[in-house]
Image (cartoon, rainbow, N blue to C red; front, side, top):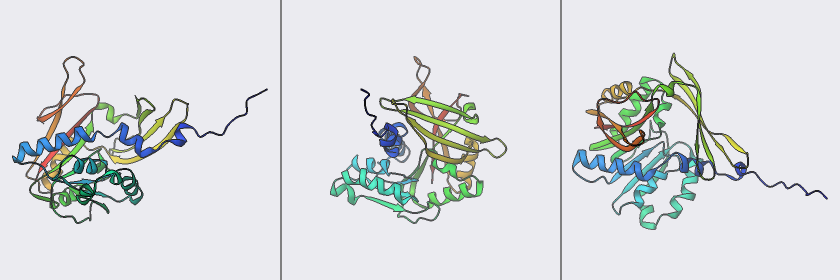
Length: 272
């Protein structure tokens, strides 16, 4: 007697792409620790208010208001459906006081108007979607206008010789595998297509969970455009190396010289 087949959904069909993204890509605790400590080091006062641009699910903004009684946040994204996911999965868990200190806005970062904040954050290379110098400069100019007098703009960036290759990288997690797919790079204009896939133990996969059409900007270009947009200073914070493992140690310091690694991620901090 044969066992009847079931139509049970695969792990990929049951998975939530936003939850997988947050688990594999974001580390809000480490990111906010760097932002708060760097802001205090530069300005000799505590960071209180942030604006999270390209916020997606507003995970970082929610983490910020949870982490301090005086912390305020604005989160901006043009995708209303993703913001709704954040409202359901993050804002719903906040206390009434915390909800009063955060605001989610569905808008384009190039046109949104918000009250001045201490820091604007544009992380996960989100600003790479601006593929011309004019557009990226305009975004930096608008971000500068959104800052208080001693405000800072925080960015991250990636590079290294592997960033110029078409490749796939897999990272194993307990319940899934994260796949970073650099699907296409045009070296003439530095335009690239990157995708994120997720693979599961039952053999199923969530293909093209996220897709990005970016320009692979270099650090000199980014710094030059920040200064052209009116920022007084643009500093690169480079990650140190663990002597035992040879890998990054998670400690970022202001630097004017970096290593020619196969792949690197760094922060940039622009002072208004």
